[in-house]
Length: 329
Image 1 (cartoon, rainbow, N blue to C red):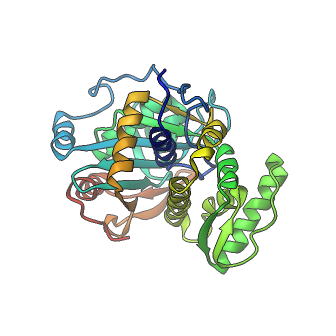
Image 2 (image 1 turned 135 degrees about the horizontal axis):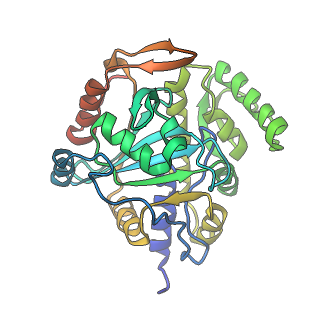
C-alpha cells in the first residue's frame, strides 16, 4: 500500500470519529485502521441488494438526486464484536453535500417499530435478532430510508482515545452530575473501570471514562436527552481530532483498532473523509421522537415503548435530511 500523506491520515482519523458518532450509549469506539493504516475490520457479508435491505427505488433516487449518503451507526450493548447485542444507540449519519452538512438523526432505542419476522417490538432488538442487516432493513422499512452501509462500535476503546487527546469539555448541570457519577461508580463495580468522580458543573473537562458515563445518563430528560449528550461528546471529540498533531495520528488509529466493524470499504471511507476535511461541513442534529412526532410513552405487555406515527416521523426525517428543515425538539 502506498504511503499515506499526513493529510490523508488525518482524513482517516477524523472520518473514523464521525463514523463513531454512535458511541456512548454503552460506549464507544472509533476507527479501524492499524497505525500502518492498512487494516480495515470490514463486514463483507452484508448484502448490497437495496431490495433485500428494504430500500425503495424512489428513496434511492431521492438521495442520488440530492447528493446525500446515509449510513447507519450502531452502538452496541456488548463488548465483543462476535456478539451481536442490542443497538443501544442508533444514529443515521447523513453526508449532505448539497447543504455542506453532516447530519445526525438519533432514533430512540425504545421506539415501537416493526421488525421483519418478529412483529412489533423495540427497534434496538433488530440488531440482536439479525445483526446489522436486519437493523438496517428495519430502519429503511420504518423510516423509508435508503441505507446500505453501517458502522457498529463497542465500548471502552473511545475512552482511551479521549484520554490520549487530553479530554473533552462539555457543559454539565447539577442533576446530570450526580447521575453521571453514579454511572462512573457502577462502571467500576461492574467492569473494573475506575475513574475519579466528575468534579463539578458548568463547562467541565472530562476524561474518557467520565465522558462515557456522562453520555450514558438517561435519568435526566430520558433517552432523547441522552442522545443529545452522545452527540455533544462526539462533536467535542471530532474537534479535538481535527486539532491533533500529525505525530499523534498513528497512536490514535492504533488505540481505535478493533473497536469498529463496518461495511464501508477503505476507498469509500477515504472519499467521504476527503470531502469532510475539504468542505468543513456544519453539524446538524435531531432526535426521534421529537416535539413534532406527538409521541407517548406506553407499556405494551411488560415493556415500555416510545409510540409514535412512524410514517409521519419519516416525513419529518426526510425534510431534515433532504430539505434541510430542522425539526422542533
